[in-house]
Image 1 (cartoon, rainbow, N blue to C red):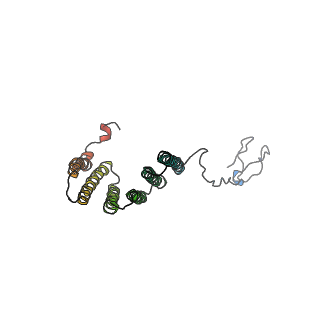
Image 2 (image 1 turned 90 degrees about the vertical axis):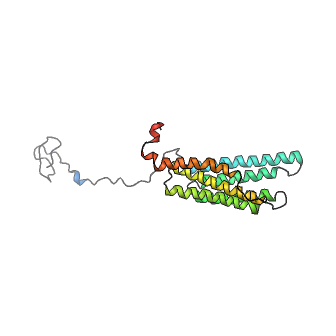
Image 3 (image 1 turned 180 degrees about the vertical axis):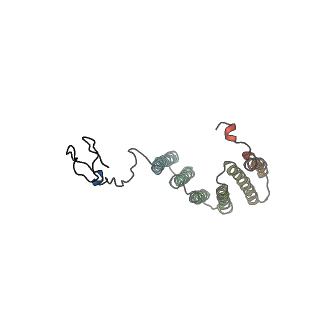
Length: 234
């Protein structure tokens, strides 16, 4: 039951005025609720998204790479009146710009970054190889080593997805991939020189496999028994 706002007497449900003091009775249900509506979410003033930060960093790096490119070119021309060593430096600068651009612009698409950087590295290697006027080692060494490296990185990435990017397993997979890659490079280079056999890669395997076993031991056994973050107060 509503009440009179002036004298406090209880009145009828639909009474227009108070029977005691004749004050008008307010019925709140007669007033429609205010439709607040929906408003688009607005970012606070001065807020910069992660993508905008990456674009800004990419722009600054692009300016720096262009500056380095022009400085190298100018120094070579001033000292020798022609292109000599600057060609190798400019190839490296251009390749570094492409690789950094792929990382900054496609940060969340790792497979695209790996594929793009593989193509960029192949382009750098073929340019370096033909800089002396001949295509010597690119087909026999450059392409296979680049493909093996990209395959090793992709292997670590997909295995890490299976194990939900566990730090210990990512570390173990990286060591295994590095050991296998070094073994392949060792065999490839020694075969290119005329005697295909493993030499220095034995040292890499001997160093990586014990650490790999330790990382797997921690992941499958040790981490279930104590939390290493508490031990190191992380």
